[in-house]
Image (cartoon, rainbow, N blue to C red; front, side, top):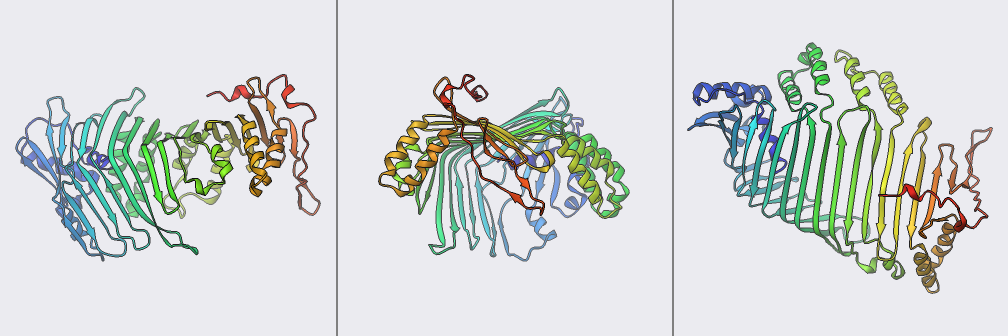
Length: 514
Protein backbone atom coordinates (compact mmCIF):
# COMPACT_ATOMS: atom_id res chain seq x y z
CA UNK A 1 0.00 0.00 0.00
CA UNK A 2 2.90 2.34 0.71
CA UNK A 3 4.04 1.91 -2.89
CA UNK A 4 0.55 2.75 -4.20
CA UNK A 5 0.24 6.03 -2.30
CA UNK A 6 2.82 7.88 -4.43
CA UNK A 7 0.83 6.91 -7.54
CA UNK A 8 -2.35 8.25 -5.96
CA UNK A 9 -0.49 11.44 -5.10
CA UNK A 10 0.83 11.85 -8.65
CA UNK A 11 -2.69 11.84 -10.03
CA UNK A 12 -3.97 14.23 -7.41
CA UNK A 13 -1.07 16.67 -7.74
CA UNK A 14 -2.53 18.10 -10.93
CA UNK A 15 -5.78 19.18 -9.31
CA UNK A 16 -6.16 22.95 -8.88
CA UNK A 17 -8.23 24.68 -6.24
CA UNK A 18 -11.34 25.45 -8.29
CA UNK A 19 -14.79 26.55 -7.31
CA UNK A 20 -17.28 24.03 -5.97
CA UNK A 21 -19.32 23.34 -9.12
CA UNK A 22 -18.79 19.82 -10.44
CA UNK A 23 -19.74 19.55 -14.12
CA UNK A 24 -18.47 18.48 -17.53
CA UNK A 25 -16.46 21.68 -17.96
CA UNK A 26 -14.70 20.97 -14.69
CA UNK A 27 -13.98 17.41 -15.82
CA UNK A 28 -12.38 18.73 -19.00
CA UNK A 29 -10.28 21.24 -17.09
CA UNK A 30 -9.15 18.52 -14.68
CA UNK A 31 -8.22 16.31 -17.65
CA UNK A 32 -6.16 19.12 -19.16
CA UNK A 33 -4.35 19.76 -15.87
CA UNK A 34 -3.59 16.07 -15.34
CA UNK A 35 -2.21 15.77 -18.87
CA UNK A 36 0.71 17.96 -17.80
CA UNK A 37 1.91 15.18 -15.51
CA UNK A 38 0.85 12.02 -17.36
CA UNK A 39 0.92 13.10 -21.00
CA UNK A 40 -1.88 13.85 -23.44
CA UNK A 41 -1.58 10.41 -24.99
CA UNK A 42 -2.89 8.74 -21.82
CA UNK A 43 -6.11 10.74 -22.10
CA UNK A 44 -6.56 10.49 -25.85
CA UNK A 45 -6.08 6.69 -25.82
CA UNK A 46 -8.48 6.14 -22.94
CA UNK A 47 -5.87 4.98 -20.44
CA UNK A 48 -7.01 7.77 -18.12
CA UNK A 49 -10.50 9.18 -18.16
CA UNK A 50 -12.17 11.90 -16.07
CA UNK A 51 -15.96 11.94 -15.72
CA UNK A 52 -18.56 13.49 -13.43
CA UNK A 53 -19.80 11.15 -10.69
CA UNK A 54 -22.49 12.94 -8.66
CA UNK A 55 -20.79 15.71 -6.68
CA UNK A 56 -17.29 14.36 -7.45
CA UNK A 57 -15.02 13.57 -10.38
CA UNK A 58 -14.09 9.98 -11.20
CA UNK A 59 -10.54 9.49 -12.47
CA UNK A 60 -10.36 5.99 -13.95
CA UNK A 61 -7.24 4.17 -15.15
CA UNK A 62 -7.95 1.44 -17.73
CA UNK A 63 -5.28 -1.26 -17.80
CA UNK A 64 -6.67 -2.87 -20.95
CA UNK A 65 -6.29 0.41 -22.84
CA UNK A 66 -2.69 0.56 -21.63
CA UNK A 67 -2.06 -2.90 -23.09
CA UNK A 68 -3.39 -1.83 -26.48
CA UNK A 69 -1.02 1.13 -26.58
CA UNK A 70 1.99 -0.77 -25.24
CA UNK A 71 2.00 -4.16 -26.94
CA UNK A 72 3.85 -7.01 -25.25
CA UNK A 73 5.19 -10.25 -26.65
CA UNK A 74 4.00 -12.03 -23.52
CA UNK A 75 0.39 -13.11 -23.13
CA UNK A 76 -1.17 -10.99 -20.39
CA UNK A 77 -4.44 -11.83 -18.71
CA UNK A 78 -6.32 -9.34 -16.56
CA UNK A 79 -9.14 -9.67 -14.11
CA UNK A 80 -8.91 -6.10 -13.01
CA UNK A 81 -11.54 -3.42 -12.93
CA UNK A 82 -10.31 0.06 -13.89
CA UNK A 83 -8.45 1.69 -11.06
CA UNK A 84 -10.49 4.73 -10.02
CA UNK A 85 -10.24 7.76 -7.78
CA UNK A 86 -13.17 9.88 -6.63
CA UNK A 87 -12.11 13.48 -6.07
CA UNK A 88 -14.45 16.02 -4.52
CA UNK A 89 -13.74 19.76 -4.05
CA UNK A 90 -14.01 21.10 -0.49
CA UNK A 91 -14.91 24.58 0.69
CA UNK A 92 -11.35 25.35 1.85
CA UNK A 93 -9.87 24.69 -1.61
CA UNK A 94 -8.62 21.20 -0.78
CA UNK A 95 -9.94 17.94 -2.23
CA UNK A 96 -11.40 14.78 -0.72
CA UNK A 97 -9.89 11.76 -2.45
CA UNK A 98 -11.11 8.18 -2.09
CA UNK A 99 -10.61 4.93 -3.93
CA UNK A 100 -10.92 1.17 -3.86
CA UNK A 101 -7.30 0.43 -4.69
CA UNK A 102 -7.17 -2.58 -7.03
CA UNK A 103 -10.01 -4.60 -5.44
CA UNK A 104 -9.92 -8.41 -5.83
CA UNK A 105 -7.50 -8.17 -8.71
CA UNK A 106 -4.99 -10.36 -10.44
CA UNK A 107 -2.52 -9.89 -13.25
CA UNK A 108 -1.25 -13.01 -14.99
CA UNK A 109 1.76 -12.72 -17.27
CA UNK A 110 2.58 -15.89 -19.19
CA UNK A 111 6.23 -16.48 -20.00
CA UNK A 112 9.55 -17.35 -18.36
CA UNK A 113 9.29 -14.43 -15.97
CA UNK A 114 5.58 -14.72 -15.29
CA UNK A 115 4.00 -13.23 -12.18
CA UNK A 116 0.56 -13.28 -10.63
CA UNK A 117 -0.69 -11.06 -7.87
CA UNK A 118 -4.00 -10.54 -6.15
CA UNK A 119 -5.17 -7.84 -3.77
CA UNK A 120 -8.42 -7.94 -1.83
CA UNK A 121 -10.45 -5.52 0.22
CA UNK A 122 -8.30 -2.44 -0.35
CA UNK A 123 -9.36 1.19 0.04
CA UNK A 124 -7.88 4.66 0.42
CA UNK A 125 -9.21 8.01 1.60
CA UNK A 126 -7.51 11.34 2.20
CA UNK A 127 -7.41 15.12 1.89
CA UNK A 128 -5.23 16.68 -0.81
CA UNK A 129 -4.03 20.29 -0.52
CA UNK A 130 -3.13 21.83 -3.92
CA UNK A 131 -1.27 24.63 -2.14
CA UNK A 132 1.17 22.11 -0.67
CA UNK A 133 0.97 19.67 -3.58
CA UNK A 134 0.57 16.94 -0.96
CA UNK A 135 -1.96 14.96 1.02
CA UNK A 136 -2.39 16.52 4.46
CA UNK A 137 -4.05 13.33 5.72
CA UNK A 138 -4.81 9.88 4.42
CA UNK A 139 -5.58 6.33 5.46
CA UNK A 140 -5.61 3.04 3.59
CA UNK A 141 -6.44 -0.57 4.37
CA UNK A 142 -6.18 -3.95 2.68
CA UNK A 143 -7.56 -7.37 3.57
CA UNK A 144 -4.65 -9.24 2.01
CA UNK A 145 -2.29 -9.68 -0.90
CA UNK A 146 -0.61 -12.60 -2.67
CA UNK A 147 2.20 -12.60 -5.21
CA UNK A 148 3.40 -15.64 -7.13
CA UNK A 149 6.53 -15.43 -9.25
CA UNK A 150 7.08 -18.06 -11.91
CA UNK A 151 10.76 -17.42 -12.41
CA UNK A 152 12.07 -20.85 -13.54
CA UNK A 153 15.30 -20.42 -11.53
CA UNK A 154 14.04 -18.91 -8.29
CA UNK A 155 10.22 -19.07 -7.97
CA UNK A 156 8.70 -17.15 -5.08
CA UNK A 157 5.39 -17.03 -3.21
CA UNK A 158 4.55 -14.03 -1.02
CA UNK A 159 1.47 -13.42 1.06
CA UNK A 160 0.45 -10.87 3.67
CA UNK A 161 -2.67 -10.48 5.73
CA UNK A 162 -4.50 -7.35 6.77
CA UNK A 163 -2.61 -4.08 6.33
CA UNK A 164 -3.36 -0.51 7.35
CA UNK A 165 -1.53 2.77 6.86
CA UNK A 166 -1.95 6.43 7.81
CA UNK A 167 -0.43 9.56 6.33
CA UNK A 168 -0.17 13.12 7.64
CA UNK A 169 1.62 16.15 6.21
CA UNK A 170 1.98 19.88 6.81
CA UNK A 171 3.88 22.88 5.52
CA UNK A 172 7.54 22.82 6.55
CA UNK A 173 8.99 25.87 8.28
CA UNK A 174 11.96 25.98 5.91
CA UNK A 175 9.96 25.31 2.76
CA UNK A 176 8.46 22.20 1.27
CA UNK A 177 6.40 19.63 3.16
CA UNK A 178 6.90 17.58 6.32
CA UNK A 179 5.14 14.22 6.28
CA UNK A 180 4.85 11.00 8.29
CA UNK A 181 3.53 7.67 7.07
CA UNK A 182 3.00 4.59 9.24
CA UNK A 183 1.98 1.12 8.11
CA UNK A 184 1.36 -2.23 9.78
CA UNK A 185 1.18 -5.58 7.99
CA UNK A 186 0.03 -8.87 9.50
CA UNK A 187 1.12 -12.42 8.66
CA UNK A 188 4.04 -11.83 6.32
CA UNK A 189 5.11 -15.11 4.65
CA UNK A 190 7.59 -15.44 1.79
CA UNK A 191 8.74 -18.75 0.35
CA UNK A 192 11.52 -18.71 -2.22
CA UNK A 193 13.39 -21.50 -3.96
CA UNK A 194 17.05 -20.53 -4.18
CA UNK A 195 19.35 -22.05 -6.76
CA UNK A 196 22.59 -22.62 -4.81
CA UNK A 197 24.42 -24.62 -7.48
CA UNK A 198 27.61 -26.40 -6.46
CA UNK A 199 27.71 -30.09 -5.58
CA UNK A 200 24.75 -30.10 -3.21
CA UNK A 201 21.03 -29.72 -3.91
CA UNK A 202 20.52 -26.91 -6.41
CA UNK A 203 16.95 -26.02 -5.45
CA UNK A 204 16.72 -25.06 -1.79
CA UNK A 205 13.45 -23.72 -0.33
CA UNK A 206 13.65 -20.87 2.17
CA UNK A 207 10.65 -19.58 4.12
CA UNK A 208 10.61 -16.24 5.92
CA UNK A 209 7.79 -15.44 8.35
CA UNK A 210 6.78 -12.60 10.62
CA UNK A 211 3.36 -12.18 12.28
CA UNK A 212 3.75 -8.40 12.27
CA UNK A 213 5.69 -5.98 10.08
CA UNK A 214 5.62 -2.24 10.66
CA UNK A 215 6.92 0.62 8.56
CA UNK A 216 7.55 4.25 9.45
CA UNK A 217 8.48 6.78 6.78
CA UNK A 218 9.11 10.46 7.55
CA UNK A 219 10.19 13.36 5.40
CA UNK A 220 11.20 16.92 6.22
CA UNK A 221 11.19 19.77 3.76
CA UNK A 222 10.26 17.68 0.73
CA UNK A 223 10.06 20.00 -2.29
CA UNK A 224 6.83 18.57 -3.67
CA UNK A 225 5.95 21.48 -5.94
CA UNK A 226 9.41 21.73 -7.46
CA UNK A 227 9.49 17.98 -8.07
CA UNK A 228 6.11 18.20 -9.81
CA UNK A 229 7.40 21.00 -12.01
CA UNK A 230 10.26 18.72 -13.05
CA UNK A 231 7.77 15.94 -13.82
CA UNK A 232 5.72 18.33 -15.93
CA UNK A 233 8.84 19.45 -17.79
CA UNK A 234 9.84 15.84 -18.50
CA UNK A 235 6.39 15.06 -19.93
CA UNK A 236 6.41 18.18 -22.11
CA UNK A 237 9.97 17.59 -23.40
CA UNK A 238 10.23 13.88 -24.11
CA UNK A 239 12.32 14.16 -27.29
CA UNK A 240 15.99 15.12 -27.34
CA UNK A 241 15.53 18.15 -29.57
CA UNK A 242 13.00 19.67 -27.19
CA UNK A 243 15.24 18.96 -24.20
CA UNK A 244 18.20 20.68 -25.85
CA UNK A 245 16.11 23.67 -26.86
CA UNK A 246 14.74 24.11 -23.33
CA UNK A 247 17.72 23.15 -21.22
CA UNK A 248 17.90 26.64 -19.70
CA UNK A 249 14.46 26.03 -18.21
CA UNK A 250 15.57 22.58 -17.06
CA UNK A 251 18.58 24.09 -15.27
CA UNK A 252 16.31 26.59 -13.53
CA UNK A 253 13.87 23.87 -12.43
CA UNK A 254 16.66 21.64 -11.15
CA UNK A 255 18.15 24.49 -9.13
CA UNK A 256 14.74 25.38 -7.68
CA UNK A 257 14.22 21.76 -6.59
CA UNK A 258 17.37 21.69 -4.45
CA UNK A 259 17.88 20.29 -1.87
CA UNK A 260 14.97 17.95 -2.93
CA UNK A 261 14.33 17.32 0.79
CA UNK A 262 15.96 18.13 4.11
CA UNK A 263 15.78 14.61 5.54
CA UNK A 264 14.12 11.28 4.75
CA UNK A 265 13.98 8.36 7.17
CA UNK A 266 12.45 4.91 6.77
CA UNK A 267 12.26 2.13 9.38
CA UNK A 268 11.17 -1.46 8.85
CA UNK A 269 10.50 -3.67 11.86
CA UNK A 270 9.86 -7.42 11.84
CA UNK A 271 8.57 -9.08 15.01
CA UNK A 272 9.32 -12.76 15.73
CA UNK A 273 11.10 -13.16 12.41
CA UNK A 274 11.97 -16.73 11.40
CA UNK A 275 13.99 -18.27 8.54
CA UNK A 276 13.40 -21.92 7.73
CA UNK A 277 15.87 -23.60 5.37
CA UNK A 278 17.56 -26.92 4.69
CA UNK A 279 20.34 -25.85 7.08
CA UNK A 280 17.88 -25.44 9.95
CA UNK A 281 15.79 -22.73 11.55
CA UNK A 282 17.10 -19.25 12.28
CA UNK A 283 15.16 -16.73 14.33
CA UNK A 284 15.06 -13.19 15.71
CA UNK A 285 12.76 -11.94 18.41
CA UNK A 286 12.85 -8.50 16.83
CA UNK A 287 14.61 -6.97 13.82
CA UNK A 288 14.52 -3.32 12.77
CA UNK A 289 16.40 -1.50 10.03
CA UNK A 290 16.46 2.28 9.66
CA UNK A 291 17.79 4.32 6.76
CA UNK A 292 18.19 8.10 6.99
CA UNK A 293 19.29 10.28 4.06
CA UNK A 294 19.87 14.03 4.01
CA UNK A 295 18.95 16.00 0.93
CA UNK A 296 21.50 17.63 -1.33
CA UNK A 297 23.37 19.79 1.18
CA UNK A 298 26.86 21.06 1.88
CA UNK A 299 27.32 18.88 4.97
CA UNK A 300 24.99 15.93 4.52
CA UNK A 301 24.96 12.55 6.14
CA UNK A 302 23.61 9.06 5.53
CA UNK A 303 22.70 6.79 8.44
CA UNK A 304 21.98 3.08 8.63
CA UNK A 305 20.88 1.44 11.86
CA UNK A 306 20.25 -2.26 12.34
CA UNK A 307 18.98 -3.64 15.64
CA UNK A 308 18.36 -7.34 16.24
CA UNK A 309 17.46 -9.12 19.48
CA UNK A 310 16.99 -12.74 20.42
CA UNK A 311 19.12 -14.29 17.67
CA UNK A 312 18.96 -18.10 17.44
CA UNK A 313 20.83 -20.29 14.96
CA UNK A 314 21.01 -24.05 14.42
CA UNK A 315 23.71 -25.21 16.84
CA UNK A 316 24.98 -27.90 14.49
CA UNK A 317 26.37 -25.14 12.25
CA UNK A 318 28.79 -23.93 14.95
CA UNK A 319 31.60 -25.48 16.99
CA UNK A 320 30.17 -26.43 20.37
CA UNK A 321 32.52 -24.15 22.29
CA UNK A 322 31.42 -21.08 20.28
CA UNK A 323 27.68 -21.37 20.96
CA UNK A 324 27.89 -19.61 24.33
CA UNK A 325 29.88 -16.77 22.73
CA UNK A 326 27.48 -16.14 19.84
CA UNK A 327 25.95 -12.64 20.01
CA UNK A 328 22.22 -12.74 20.70
CA UNK A 329 21.67 -8.99 20.41
CA UNK A 330 23.20 -6.75 17.76
CA UNK A 331 23.00 -2.99 17.30
CA UNK A 332 24.95 -1.53 14.39
CA UNK A 333 25.00 2.13 13.39
CA UNK A 334 27.05 3.28 10.42
CA UNK A 335 26.93 5.63 7.47
CA UNK A 336 28.58 8.66 5.94
CA UNK A 337 29.23 12.26 7.04
CA UNK A 338 30.68 15.49 5.62
CA UNK A 339 29.01 14.74 2.31
CA UNK A 340 28.97 17.86 0.15
CA UNK A 341 26.55 17.12 -2.68
CA UNK A 342 25.35 20.70 -2.89
CA UNK A 343 28.50 22.03 -4.55
CA UNK A 344 28.61 19.07 -6.92
CA UNK A 345 24.98 19.46 -7.92
CA UNK A 346 25.15 23.21 -8.51
CA UNK A 347 28.37 22.98 -10.52
CA UNK A 348 27.01 20.11 -12.61
CA UNK A 349 23.73 21.92 -13.29
CA UNK A 350 25.57 25.03 -14.36
CA UNK A 351 28.09 23.17 -16.54
CA UNK A 352 26.09 20.51 -18.38
CA UNK A 353 25.24 21.13 -22.03
CA UNK A 354 22.88 18.73 -23.79
CA UNK A 355 24.27 19.86 -27.13
CA UNK A 356 27.53 18.13 -26.25
CA UNK A 357 28.23 14.40 -26.13
CA UNK A 358 28.69 13.74 -23.26
CA UNK A 359 26.89 16.71 -21.65
CA UNK A 360 29.67 16.85 -19.04
CA UNK A 361 33.28 16.26 -20.06
CA UNK A 362 35.40 13.56 -18.44
CA UNK A 363 37.78 16.24 -17.19
CA UNK A 364 34.93 18.09 -15.50
CA UNK A 365 33.77 14.87 -13.87
CA UNK A 366 37.25 14.14 -12.53
CA UNK A 367 37.56 17.67 -11.16
CA UNK A 368 34.14 17.37 -9.54
CA UNK A 369 35.11 14.14 -7.77
CA UNK A 370 38.42 15.64 -6.65
CA UNK A 371 36.58 18.64 -5.19
CA UNK A 372 34.14 16.30 -3.42
CA UNK A 373 36.97 14.29 -1.83
CA UNK A 374 38.75 17.50 -0.78
CA UNK A 375 35.80 18.23 1.54
CA UNK A 376 36.88 15.20 3.62
CA UNK A 377 33.84 12.92 3.42
CA UNK A 378 33.82 10.19 6.07
CA UNK A 379 32.64 6.64 6.52
CA UNK A 380 31.47 6.51 10.12
CA UNK A 381 30.87 3.61 12.49
CA UNK A 382 28.81 5.09 15.29
CA UNK A 383 28.42 3.47 18.71
CA UNK A 384 27.59 -0.18 17.97
CA UNK A 385 27.36 -3.25 20.19
CA UNK A 386 27.37 -7.05 20.02
CA UNK A 387 26.16 -8.73 23.22
CA UNK A 388 25.21 -12.03 24.77
CA UNK A 389 24.84 -13.18 28.34
CA UNK A 390 28.60 -13.19 28.99
CA UNK A 391 30.21 -10.70 26.63
CA UNK A 392 29.61 -7.20 25.27
CA UNK A 393 31.63 -5.74 22.41
CA UNK A 394 31.30 -1.99 21.77
CA UNK A 395 32.93 -0.18 18.88
CA UNK A 396 33.03 3.08 16.99
CA UNK A 397 35.29 4.77 14.50
CA UNK A 398 35.63 6.58 11.21
CA UNK A 399 37.51 6.42 7.92
CA UNK A 400 38.65 9.25 5.66
CA UNK A 401 40.55 9.17 2.38
CA UNK A 402 43.47 11.61 2.31
CA UNK A 403 45.35 11.28 -0.96
CA UNK A 404 42.74 8.71 -2.07
CA UNK A 405 44.07 6.24 0.51
CA UNK A 406 42.02 5.12 3.53
CA UNK A 407 42.91 6.46 6.97
CA UNK A 408 40.89 4.75 9.71
CA UNK A 409 40.61 5.07 13.49
CA UNK A 410 38.55 2.68 15.60
CA UNK A 411 38.03 2.06 19.30
CA UNK A 412 36.86 -1.35 20.51
CA UNK A 413 35.85 -2.12 24.12
CA UNK A 414 35.05 -5.62 25.37
CA UNK A 415 33.46 -6.58 28.65
CA UNK A 416 33.91 -10.24 29.55
CA UNK A 417 36.94 -10.90 27.35
CA UNK A 418 38.33 -13.31 29.94
CA UNK A 419 35.22 -15.45 29.46
CA UNK A 420 36.08 -15.68 25.76
CA UNK A 421 39.62 -16.78 26.56
CA UNK A 422 38.44 -19.31 29.15
CA UNK A 423 35.92 -20.85 26.77
CA UNK A 424 38.48 -21.15 23.97
CA UNK A 425 41.16 -22.50 26.35
CA UNK A 426 38.87 -25.22 27.69
CA UNK A 427 37.83 -26.24 24.18
CA UNK A 428 41.43 -26.23 22.91
CA UNK A 429 42.16 -29.42 24.88
CA UNK A 430 39.95 -31.44 22.51
CA UNK A 431 39.08 -29.19 19.55
CA UNK A 432 41.86 -28.44 16.99
CA UNK A 433 40.01 -25.37 15.72
CA UNK A 434 39.86 -23.90 19.23
CA UNK A 435 43.53 -24.76 19.69
CA UNK A 436 44.35 -22.57 16.69
CA UNK A 437 42.20 -19.70 17.98
CA UNK A 438 43.59 -19.71 21.54
CA UNK A 439 47.06 -18.18 20.80
CA UNK A 440 45.43 -15.41 18.77
CA UNK A 441 43.03 -14.65 21.63
CA UNK A 442 45.99 -14.27 24.01
CA UNK A 443 47.93 -12.12 21.55
CA UNK A 444 44.98 -9.80 21.06
CA UNK A 445 44.65 -9.41 24.82
CA UNK A 446 48.34 -8.46 24.99
CA UNK A 447 47.63 -5.23 23.12
CA UNK A 448 44.67 -4.26 25.29
CA UNK A 449 44.36 -1.55 27.92
CA UNK A 450 42.29 -2.20 30.99
CA UNK A 451 39.75 0.50 31.76
CA UNK A 452 38.69 1.43 35.31
CA UNK A 453 35.50 -0.62 35.01
CA UNK A 454 37.42 -3.72 33.94
CA UNK A 455 36.70 -3.59 30.24
CA UNK A 456 39.52 -4.15 27.79
CA UNK A 457 40.06 -1.55 25.10
CA UNK A 458 41.90 -1.36 21.80
CA UNK A 459 42.43 2.00 20.06
CA UNK A 460 43.36 1.12 16.49
CA UNK A 461 44.84 3.56 13.97
CA UNK A 462 45.32 2.35 10.39
CA UNK A 463 47.10 5.17 8.61
CA UNK A 464 47.09 6.02 4.93
CA UNK A 465 50.82 5.21 4.82
CA UNK A 466 50.05 1.56 5.63
CA UNK A 467 51.05 1.64 9.30
CA UNK A 468 48.83 0.12 11.99
CA UNK A 469 49.09 1.26 15.62
CA UNK A 470 47.19 -0.35 18.51
CA UNK A 471 47.08 1.52 21.82
CA UNK A 472 50.24 3.39 20.84
CA UNK A 473 52.18 0.24 19.92
CA UNK A 474 53.35 -0.26 16.36
CA UNK A 475 51.71 -3.40 15.02
CA UNK A 476 52.81 -2.77 11.43
CA UNK A 477 55.20 -0.04 10.20
CA UNK A 478 54.47 2.20 7.25
CA UNK A 479 54.89 0.70 3.81
CA UNK A 480 58.37 1.36 2.40
CA UNK A 481 58.71 1.99 -1.31
CA UNK A 482 61.77 0.30 -2.83
CA UNK A 483 63.86 1.87 -5.56
CA UNK A 484 62.29 -0.61 -7.99
CA UNK A 485 58.83 0.50 -6.95
CA UNK A 486 58.08 -2.56 -4.84
CA UNK A 487 56.47 -2.27 -1.42
CA UNK A 488 57.83 -4.01 1.68
CA UNK A 489 55.37 -5.23 4.29
CA UNK A 490 57.56 -6.14 7.27
CA UNK A 491 54.67 -7.55 9.33
CA UNK A 492 56.58 -6.61 12.46
CA UNK A 493 54.78 -6.23 15.75
CA UNK A 494 55.82 -4.48 18.94
CA UNK A 495 53.90 -5.35 22.08
CA UNK A 496 53.98 -2.72 24.83
CA UNK A 497 56.25 -3.66 27.76
CA UNK A 498 54.17 -2.02 30.44
CA UNK A 499 51.30 -3.76 32.18
CA UNK A 500 48.15 -2.77 30.25
CA UNK A 501 46.25 -2.70 33.49
CA UNK A 502 48.43 0.15 34.80
CA UNK A 503 47.47 2.77 32.21
CA UNK A 504 46.71 5.92 34.20
CA UNK A 505 44.51 7.42 31.54
CA UNK A 506 42.31 4.35 31.21
CA UNK A 507 42.49 4.42 27.43
CA UNK A 508 39.88 6.16 25.32
CA UNK A 509 36.88 4.35 26.72
CA UNK A 510 35.07 7.63 27.32
CA UNK A 511 34.58 7.82 23.56
CA UNK A 512 32.46 4.72 23.63
CA UNK A 513 29.38 6.12 25.25
CA UNK A 514 25.99 5.57 23.56
